Length: 366
Ligand SMILES: Nc1nc2c(ncn2[C@@H]2O[C@H](COP(=O)(O)OP(=O)(O)O)[C@@H](O)[C@H]2O)c(=O)[nH]1
Ligand SMILES: [Mg+2]
Image (cartoon, rainbow, N blue to C red; front, side, top):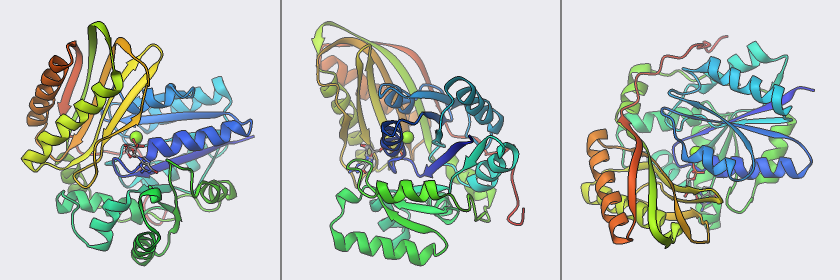
């Protein structure tokens, strides 16, 4: 039996990890096995921890995107295949990546078609960003080059999941769905919510039905793509948090995200995605912020006191990475001090993503 290989793309903060966790759970509940592969430009991912605490086997491809580390992706998948014998493999590429049909979906089908049945390529989209960039033709608080990446992601999708529909009253859903259909007529548009599970029956049945995977390769200008990606400052950090007495980890991550979000707002810097997790032996508390049109939220409460843990910070912001680092350091320092906590930095790295150099790049006629 071939494993079904599902790649789920979409911009930073669109809800990919949340949706994959739900999708994974549904498949698991049917008695099938699931393996997940996460991906980032640097190590230490909130996403990997978020999925592992839900009991999934997760492999991480770190240091560059799937397209530039295609062999690592293939090796991770092979490891999962041999060790776990999964029925479904779910992969989440970096949210600032595009041209994934040419560089990942088609190469997977061509070189590993004997092992995997590659599912139609799904791209999730946040309704607020879709409204700003697709409907109103703005840049969503970013530049035209970042908006270019966002639009290219949608252009190459087989399935567009207009996600987080729980946030939208019916007339707004229809307005954005119509704009997506108009702009991307080749894609099938599905309305989903990773939070409530709405639309998942339809999405899963489309993934199961199979059909063309990566039917459309978009024309991508790599100069614009690279410049757009490089406008985003990337920060991944891990810190060891200590405390003389038990503390509330939910409050800590929520306050930290709120504090960074407030500094970004004061500077007029748009966040693509800011995620902060406190991982303890018994689970994790996770808080997120996905841009000025949203509010910081506790996406995964731990719900009980902790006496310490590992704080993982992943930030992707339209800002110089050094400035981002300074601002995050300051938020951590003041928030921890106000809650009587101490922290020691284990690892921290900040950078602008380099130019994507895919291992394979199929042409539109391939
Ligand atoms: N309201 C709502 N929020 C969601 C949904 N899916 C994800 N989110 C939130 O959006 C933020 C980003 O989600 P995440 O899954 O990490 O996005 P990713 O960057 O695409 O992997 C988090 O705060 C999530 O809790 C959804 O369906 N509805
Ligand atoms: Mg994610």
